[in-house]
Image 1 (cartoon, protein in one colour):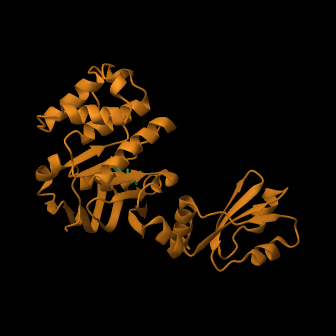
Image 2 (cartoon, rainbow, N blue to C red):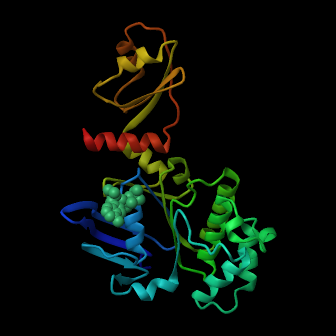
Image 3 (cartoon, helix red, strand yellow):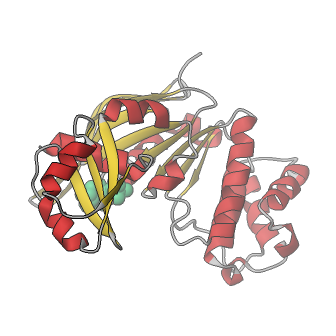
Length: 306
Ligand code: ADP
């Protein structure tokens, strides 16, 4: 089966006056139909630029892009009705009610018989009871949930989510992911950009980007194995001293004080006894927590940049 999303050597720079900012520097990736892929990276990594290009919203400079087997930029209008898009701040009509907004988007996409789907989607995100509320009176989380409903009303084959939960409360976040995951179960392809590393773990596939490049791509499990990293927590009465002991030490990719613990991400070759000898007899307890997605990301970036 053809990939839902396919790019090769995709590049994009923004030009304004004499300034050129490279946003994407040769991005190659493929997402299969029905996959839930998360694109993670810090602010400025190029996530929004990539999603806008994949949706046919902005031009690119080099490389190739195919969405649902259609080449961009030429096929942008052909994919418009086959994809859904939700940005950080979805453009709803404040003076229309929840239900009127959904009806509006259904009409824009030319969907005739949407009543049952609208009710099911509104119910799934717990918005059915607010059907008559004006969109401008919704909380931030409710607005994003309504955005997802509007983005799904035309039964797209791919849903693009650009940092959909920025500023969204935990309950709305859960509602939002419930409906997205239900749709993935029914065959929808989802491509979600997020700066929240923990959120990415919901996706079966994780694509890490940094400075306009894809730096790692796989499942949480394969990324953990390939990272060659180990995490340690060094707990003591003097975390500042511990932090100092691991400053600029070869094999220590990152060190952060969190309360009484210093959280380390190290090369897998660094053992607990290596850490002890570095501490030089200073009293500390050493624990080995599970590698988080954030550990994997910072560990990978540290490997890139050293
Ligand atoms: P992210 O979504 O990961 O935060 P962006 O795609 O928004 O990253 O930005 C990638 C890079 O491109 C950043 O350096 C950003 O400043 C720059 N950039 C984004 N949009 C524009 C624009 N319209 N004009 C100029 N530079 C831009």
